[in-house]
Image 1 (cartoon, rainbow, N blue to C red):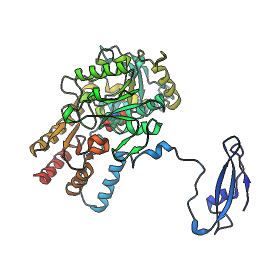
Image 2: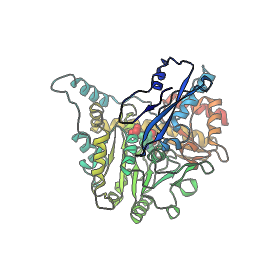
Image 3: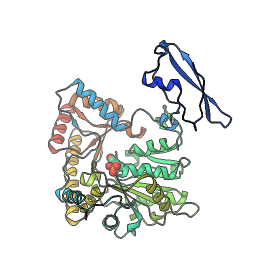
Image 4: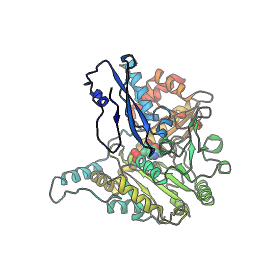
Length: 465
Ligand SMILES: Cc1ncc(COP(=O)(O)O)c(C=O)c1O
């Protein structure tokens, strides 16, 4: 076999490279590459040695896997649920499976919104109406409409708003902003994107199986005993605090007094809160819809939000992040300036068609239409709440969020998930998928067609009567 000199700066191909395509004339012999560190510490030389055909393996590159990705447990929660749903359908091909699981919206987007998107789309076919790349931060009228509709009277201005392709992407962009050296706190249980993006960025240690937690993340337990608000006197201070209210998955919304405590806690410790308000329009009680309703929050908080659950934009993709000018790093540099740099580097702005839809959402008719959509899902929520209450379960959430959090004390969430799927063909979400604090709970989502929600509830009644 050949021994070749390989330097990353050269482009020479080894004979082993041709074997990738199965064209190696030594068809029953495979080559194995061994890299040797060069003087500069880089991978500078590869020796090729023959191995017998009994050791055949798939071709592998010389690139090491990102060790942070290797820390992640199983799949992301929702793909894992989708996998189990697909396996169930293979087992019961005729079953009428109902999904109240992943929290995807089902109702049509109101016409006042799709009409605006259609018009923008048609205009793109005209010389006058065509537009290409827009401002990375979003179109000015939309930023102004978000500021005036969601942040009137709290001093958030148009240029504090960054329009995006959704809250989830912004959560990851914020992690890029924070980098790998920060420490992180999350509610436990919480929406999985906070923890997973933190792991991917390298902010955490390994997953510790005994406690079901990643090292170096502060899990702030939220349970019925503490009213789903963490006991801040027991929370270690961290650089960043992810806080979602109304919360996914518990459905609970923090009160003004609780958020005042949270903001004070952040201020005392010099932390930044990332407040996820993706369900703010579902708040029915007299509770804050934005962290910026709390005095002083502009100096310690970022807010991410989304049109996904208000207007059925889970597929259209449109959200935003608010970073007030008052939010500064320890050296006095404005956080928003760095986020702007991230957005300009990693993102070229939200789709102009989606932004036309977002602007229509915030017209008077659009707001009424979004309230109707939210109202419809809130009726679903009530049906689910009534069902589990009538069956004698301890049930939480629902009042200010489209999620009902049902307690199955002493049982494994995945076992309950599997039993419900097996016996009723209804997909829910196991609470433990949101963190160890979710063990023993099931999240039932109110995103569904009315007939499906009614049918699922009648099956729950059959199962638990
Ligand atoms: C708390 C929370 N934040 C963010 C998202 C994602 O929102 P988007 O569709 O805007 O990415 C979700 C979606 O379920 C969510 O539950």
